[in-house]
Length: 181
Image (cartoon, rainbow, N blue to C red; front, side, top):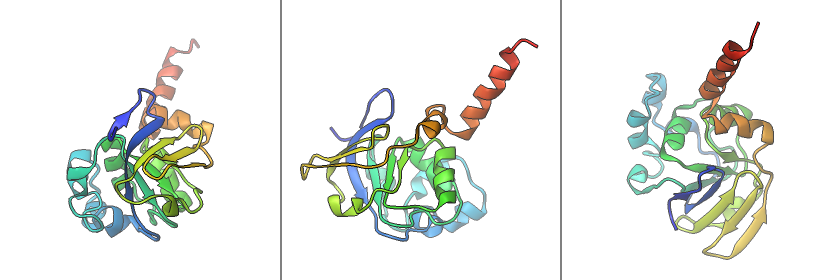
């Protein structure tokens, strides 16, 4: 079961990787030196994802796994860690995250649900989870706990479906070129 993603990439089934509250992007998600170096290559970012909070994370994680976090996840408007998460095929569920962090995650094409009150109390690292980002369904198979949270807004689903801001802009540009004038 771990590591499965359906074709739509909205319904994830995988292991839980639980983090606490106030995990900052620099240092907590990705080392500061990669942010200041403006490193955006997923292959260089992946080995450093959560290196300071969960050493060896990138070696254990599989596509379809879910990162579950507490309040104020990803403080700082950086995107480097979200690029790595998206490249790995992960999903993100947060009790809360600052607006700029949320915007960065969406812009990278990372499926994310926020405003998931007390989600960290419903799971532990290693639990088998199922999450539907379109409906907001959260199901911990290990503990047989179901909860509905606010789903990813429909307007943002379109951005994620095309791979983030870059994919959306490419599609928009193509539509402009295809429109008769």
